[in-house]
Amino acid sequence: MNKNLVIIGVIAVLLIGGYFAYQAINKPVATVSDNQQKQQPSGETKTNDNQDQTNPIVVGVDVNVGQTHEIIYTDAGYSPSMLTIKVGDTVTWKNQSSAGDWVGSAMHPTHTVYSGTTLQQHCPDTSNTSFDECKADKSGESWSFTFTKAGAWGYHNHVNAKHFGKVTVE
Ligand SMILES: [Cu+2]
Image (cartoon, rainbow, N blue to C red; front, side, top):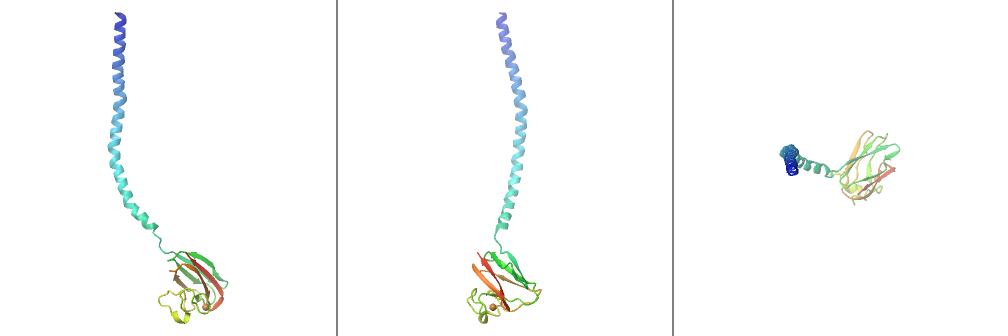
């Protein structure tokens, strides 16, 4: 009798204790996770909306727009004398020499290599498409040309042809 009562008592204590322990463990956890699950979806939705709105701007930045490169002309010549650029890029020659600078496509004196036309045929080059400045600029002036053809394009100073350089367009 006593043994049975003890066993029943132990089982009862374990069941009751286990029930309260189960309630104590699960209730707070369930409440916290419920609150987190209710809060997070609205927050994540707003974050995703913001990312969707900014993505097109990031793609726009990646679009290749023609870059501008500088070549300085001094009494020593062109620097850099060799330059590699991309199709659509622009090169600006800045005359910091004490004399004139007339940037002209190879070969001197005809300037036919880039355009296929001679200096006499394409100057004055009002459309600025023949890779020929068509006049000598003065110290402190500059001239820009946008390359639309891939290739290795030699050039020189038409009024001082010992100064020359090359623009490689990829
Ligand atoms: Cu020339």
